[in-house]
Image (cartoon, rainbow, N blue to C red; front, side):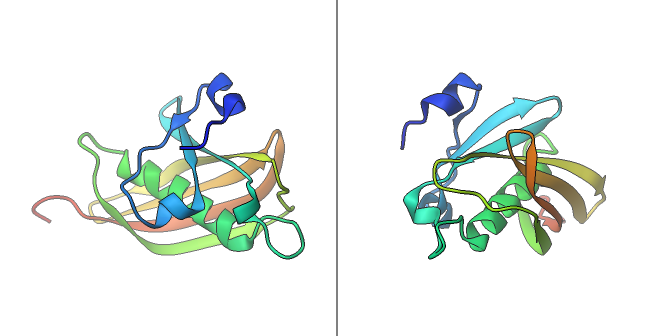
Amino acid sequence: MVEDDEARLEGFAPARFTPGFLDHGGPYWLKPAEGRTLVGLRMAPHHMNYRDMAHGGVLTTLADVALSYQAFASEDPPVPVATASLTTNFLAPARLGDWLVADARIDRIGGRSAHVSGRIARGGETLATMSGVFTLHRKGA
């Protein structure tokens, strides 16, 4: 796990996602905030494209992590989810060393799906907006 003193100072703790794909794109950080969870990510060399900006796939993955986590954590115990639809709108680039925070909220949740939207920001600047629909895999459903 990569240490990030700024993340810790801002109250973020390392995400403990199950091993797999997300291990390659992180490390991700989580912070509870007024009924939702913020997801943080420090831009590292492996996130950059050939133009020294964060690759769009990195921001799209961060969007998917933040949106799906909101749906996952919407119930106690958490409900497994699968991404059904994901839209990411890029507004400004992220650069090496940037600390990004994804903030997502549930817009609507039903028996089988959750609609979630949010933004990715660097400080007060919005770098991307995002929305997604997530299939809920509740026990017995």
